[in-house]
Image (cartoon, rainbow, N blue to C red; front, top):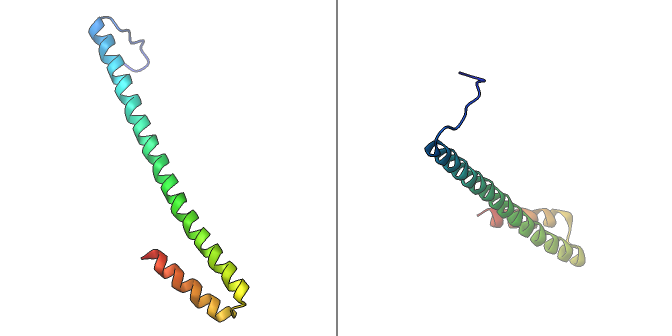
Length: 83
């Protein structure tokens, strides 16, 4: 059974094989496409958070805010972002 040459003998068998190949290729494309979208969305969210924190850090550096207050501000914005 395993390793034997399987031949397609009728047009019904050929149609079935083509249908299975077509359906599985659509399913694979859908799965990989959805995974790409999910990864892209996660990256977009992380990029927005990093951009916001960069702006906050730049303003704190400009205002010469002490380290303890900087830490509290970071913690606050991290908390607000996660909500």
